[in-house]
Length: 478
Image (cartoon, rainbow, N blue to C red):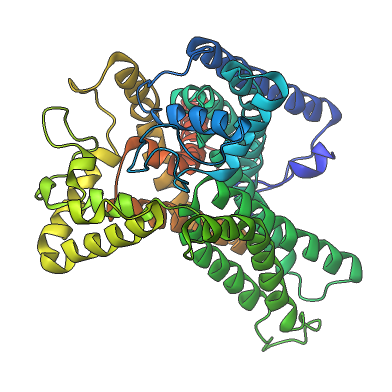
């Protein structure tokens, strides 16, 4: 990897680009390596702390389900549970509620080394520690320069939520990494799409990037299908990038632009790759339930429970123990349905809640802001939850807001069209992803994909503060 060639991007195009010496390039590599080691160590410590047993720890109750499901797969029972299980799956019946890809990962580990959850924790801790830090560095560097990239990697390495979840048997460690990977590919592809006249080598690279984009999106969707709702916006952004770069020249003749069918073929290639990754599970679902289920059966459950009239106009992240349970809320006449049919029926009921009282739905959605962006300690939460909440999002939030403000100012002042386009994609993702959860079900854990990019802005804000401190007291150059 040519590190020197990768770190020549500066914060703003009109700023002078510094020459990178061999010494500074080595210092950069060494700093990034240290950050990766710290990230791995923290995630390994989290893995050992959670240990060989699988317990319902705060925020990671899903690991109980993934562990049991993986054990059943290894024992030859397929994707099913031995006893009645969340959300409303009967014993021995097929389930598609959980991520197939993560279940297969756990089952593969159990099949090779035996049923040792700690082994699965440690493997994903190392993988996520390396890739999360590296991809955060790449995105931060592309957007705001190498220093911000390093700080972003460092902030991601020590973010409590990230290393806590990295030691848990849930989808988050790989899901977060795959989102970063998707954006990294999209940014690289956007750079290629802006070249008006591409030689054969560049066109070949473009096809590889389209394939990689489809692979990244497919992996992300297999970990959590919700990401598919953002794919049309990502495609729209790439289409806008290409159209903007290939606008007819007015003043002076320009090289012949790319043929219009090439980007369209690229979208087809990426979509086919996504379809190839999802199709086996769609076929499995049809065989298991006798109906068309593209991937997972969880959207209807979440939308029904998240908008149930039991909340009134004030959303509660987890129903209290002294009230009705989530299973109690499911109408009795729907309970005989299989998991797929029940998911579809509950989605229709959830939509019915909205049409019956749109004003309540609006107020309920607004109330979810409190749960989604919660950063203060709560008497209803345990010590681990409060520590993670205050020591991560609460601690980073001022820098995130400062960085967001700085990025908006840079957006309007920058004469680098690519930097402005990149920022638009980040803003778009944070808005769309947040809106999806505010309109359905909001928990702090569901905000973590947004935190991925808020940390990039936190790094920008922190670097800006350090620069201002260093310049304090220095005379202003005429």
